[in-house]
Image (cartoon, rainbow, N blue to C red; front, side):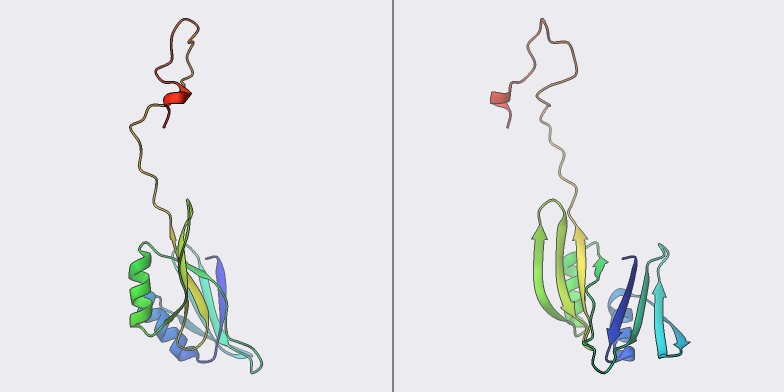
Length: 143
């Protein structure tokens, strides 16, 4: 994530959930509109949490990059989060699920697709001069 701002009905509960679930640590800044919580990781990704306005529905859909989607889902459930959109796979890209933090905001976890396994198959063509040679495979035998 680059920068994400969450609107929450309970700053303390949202902070505790994110710190307990993902190991993040927030700093508190007093703004003219009230307390504002910020977190920045070493890669300079920033998350801000502010109080939701009275007429505002808390929320944002932001994706947290995780190494193990199943483990992230277990942690979300264990800490009281609710899965609102189950695991969805996008072939060749990755997988994600959406969850609701106990105090309101909806977020998502994303896991990149694993690198494809290398194959021992030889390419059907090579950049060589085959004017007097047969290539080592043909399109009809390619799999």
